[in-house]
Image (cartoon, rainbow, N blue to C red; front, side, top):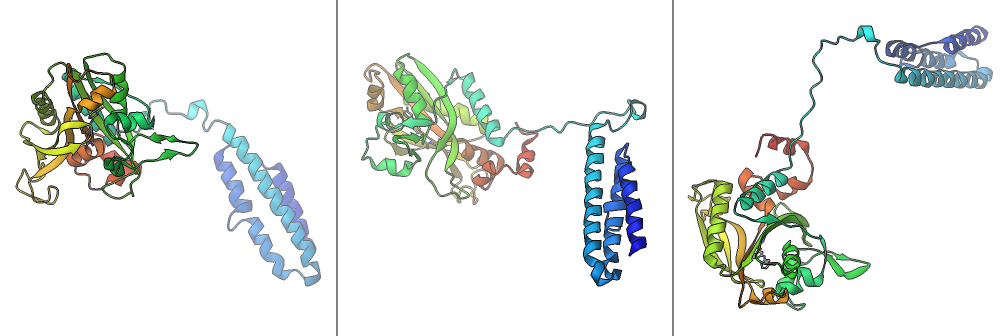
Length: 343
Ligand code: 2NL
């Protein structure tokens, strides 16, 4: 074993004296001592030739040797990490720069921005408000008393420390807060994130995005509502789109309606997007219920208003033919990158 130990001593000296002025020299050091065919591995392999009574000693020597090589490697590595990769003369200053990868806006942001810009042209301003809300602003003021069955469809998340606070189920809370300020007329849209206690699937999520709109003034009529929304969908989906209103029910509007547009996929002939009907629902709307105006201190005999609400995810799915709602919150760049050139 003696010659072997002697050889190890020599390698130890070599390690101690080793220098690595650049990354290449560092790699050479690593390969020579620590690589899969390096000296540490090779010398370890000598164990089988060492007589049994000396195996223990040899093992100890080898462990120390390995440690020395590893420690030296770390020291050399941190020194090269801190030194410039190349000297000034080695850099080719005429090379073109590295391209900066351009990101893209999230499809929900794209569509929200588009909705906002369309309504801005009609004189609507943007209002925002809290996502954590009290019962009055999320339900009570909207003509949804505590035992109202419509609350069942809007089960949400409550705050443990204070169960009278909840995550808002729609952005209507912002309208209520704006109406309470008492400054009329009001012509506002409210984009924002909302929450529902739903099982997550391709068609439902526990959070999503909404844009609601509100116009309160003297002599606001259902005709104003129809014309405003008609203008909106034509700007959003193209001038050829057709609309229809179906009577509906919301506790906070009377009368209430849902608006359908002619199916963009089949042009109204019938396909699986429109379930063979030729129409797809895109929003709910109506004339603000007199109780809601009253709840906010507005005289319903003097003022009338219309309101509407739409899910941004739904509009985005229709506009870009996205089949699964979950794609919007998974942050998969392969999905998000497809919107680089979208408007
Ligand atoms: C839907 C339907 C709607 C409203 C939202 C509203 C707000 C106030 C007063 C009256 Cl403060 N109405 N908002 C009205 C009708 C429908 O949303 O399906 N949204 C996704």
